[in-house]
Length: 331
Image (cartoon, rainbow, N blue to C red; front, side, top):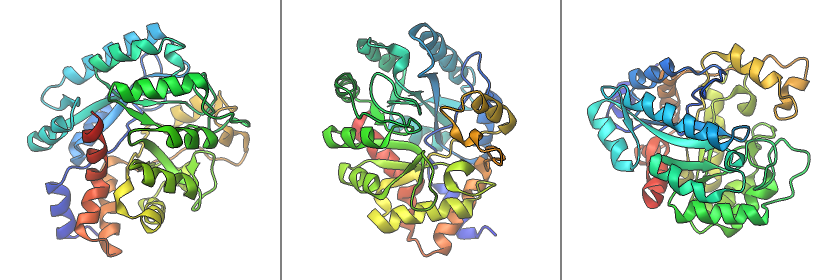
């Protein structure tokens, strides 16, 4: 039951979800553009979409960012291209969705790190280093071996920082994340993850990673993926347990939302089943597949925070202000 207090809070505050995994051009894993309207209808003020992944190349990335930019600009009555935090504030005021740009990995530009400056001009603001499998930059979280951040990877991190973009460590291997945290000069993010202490999964963070990120001033976006949170349906009550673990460990200043909601999960299951080496969940014959809640369900998580005695200032930080603080510092 949503209380009047919670509904008023929801209506009056920016809700920031760090990732919507919009289908890439010529790919389909369950997130066609029509579902962005669900974020608008739910009252979410920000999410980010990708235009390239590790399996892409530079030509694909150029076409991809052009396609995603056209999508954002095709509906000025609903979407705003988020280049600054002020754009997100404006989206809230106007009842629209601010849409940012990120990438799933860095292999798409190979050793051509200089191209990042061009993509920054086109709207790229968050760069995820690795996507499950290791690449030129470092280790992936589902690889058996993680050799850590490479020498080239250090160059990539420094260039992302120089260009005032955010380094995203989601999908990155454990050792590599610690290497980046040790060298970073700006706050980092894990855009969409779960917590290992609550559920053992290769995509989840250990407590030492959480502590290191808090010392760095970064932010964790909690995923809504049922595989990561250890709940068959991806229930908000299960996500709250992951959130509360972070809050109890380091306080409310370093956690937010990165739900990664997928709407047509049969397509996602089919896509991941063809890459078992990167998604070993499907090596288990008893695995039932990915499941997620929806943007309109997030208010239930806000209600759970209030039900468990979280002060309003802490809830404001978690629903948006932590990511706003990080992005305002860097963008």
